[in-house]
Length: 222
Image 1 (cartoon, rainbow, N blue to C red):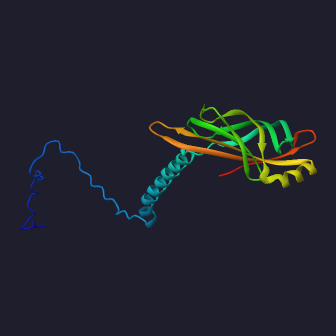
Image 2: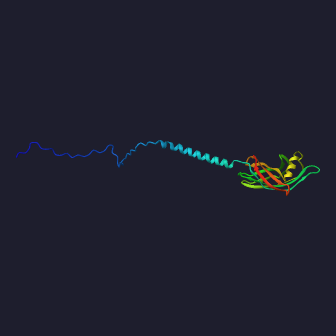
Image 3: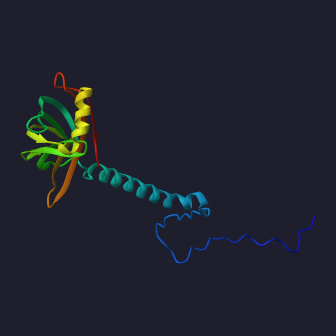
């Protein structure tokens, strides 16, 4: 068998080309692709809502502090009311003698002390004042109470203008008097004083036979 005239060329050795430019010890690089983030309407409204909540909380705290620290008038009440003496004179003129013991309770509900300059207790008959007595000044601590004692003593008080009603009351066996207790002072703060006052009106019915109080009704008056 005859050989072929043409034969395949021998293979040529192949070397890969080096990378350009050459970088010794090159670290691998990674690319991270993140999806696009969209905020929902609820998330847009979340931050303003937090601000509104904070503002509302601060407003509530300030209102509560103002409510508790705002000054108010003290509470005045009658703790004890006792008739010691009552006598009606017919000669030489119609007049009466009255001795009345009064104990007033003053309650300071403020967070500051109270300085009261006076406590006046007066007694009247049918809208006409018969007399009064003034007690000394004092001081009441914050959130505390104090008692003021006073004795109202009236002698030979003429009530000629109300002679007929007085005779009717004597025939009935009871006389109705009105007592008014008032206090005035200042609420002591750091830089200034705030004037305060209180008033209590009592209606007392006195039994002329045993010279005692048979009924009393007291209420604060603004």
